[in-house]
Image 1 (cartoon, rainbow, N blue to C red):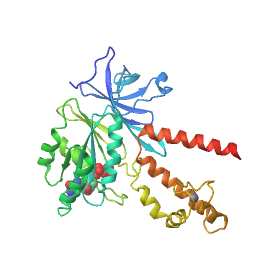
Image 2: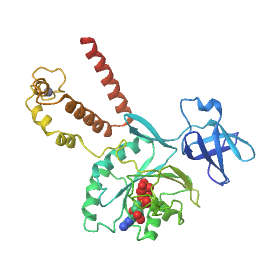
Image 3: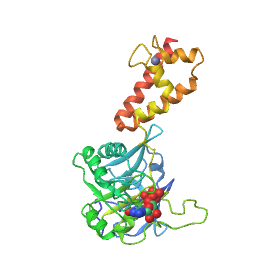
Image 4: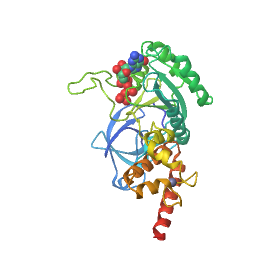
Length: 330
Ligand SMILES: Nc1nc2c(ncn2[C@@H]2O[C@H](COP(=O)(O)OP(=O)(O)OP(=O)(O)O)[C@@H](O)[C@H]2O)c(=O)[nH]1
Ligand SMILES: [Zn+2]
């Protein structure tokens, strides 16, 4: 039997969700199609993958979800400045990054913020060590400098036995782990090794798929034999963890960066400040206003990418209040 919270009504766990279609698993590992009771459909907080719910069976084996049980943790990400829930009751987040093209220490930093915010514990997992043996030591060192004691595991799918021994220590019967990371870094591959069976069809070459391989498009929760739960999730590159930095934004807009050096104030926001060289350039037609708008948008996105959810909300409110003040002035 799986390790579920006890409750007076039958308790199940959500292992899949697509719009209003749910799948739940029972403590005896039986899987059932499920729907939300009408009352829950209108609630502020909808059940999501990883949630424990209670309810009752109908039509023999279908499950009616009538109550969402309290969450221990909630993993979210920022998407279009909106906080978006990823999974509930996750205890361990494997921040998965490949040692080749995908590698970025600053992205790991942003993932770490997301994970600490959620209440779960992070573990950094580097994949594809076989592809970049020469870079391995330097990249491990680079990460160690920002990890502050968070475990760093190095894996290669060419050595599945070592993958299992390295990761099994983090997979207790009470664990719910999730793999997050860009598409193609090898999350499904690790999951398959851990489950020692094909849970996700990795590398399944399908006609019409130009990448020639399966891509995870929906989140699923799986239970391992020992009772540990694992969630596979689609790549979340660029969603809440934008890969560009504020400095990189400046590099993409060199003309604005150089104009800004002529602004009267060092911290000029190029709005209505006196002596703003950027606004002056727009007035005389040397710079398009759209360019400044694009610059601001990207700057904002990269700022948000480094903030936690509370900071994002605060920044949004500040911006809103600031805008209202500006409106009143005109
Ligand atoms: N050389 C090498 N290839 C790997 C390794 N791990 C995974 N791959 C390959 O990388 C490709 C992508 O692996 P997946 O496991 O599907 O990646 P994913 O992170 O689940 O990707 P999404 O489902 O798109 O999020 C596959 O062709 C794997 O065989 C590794 O350690 N070494
Ligand atoms: Zn300015």
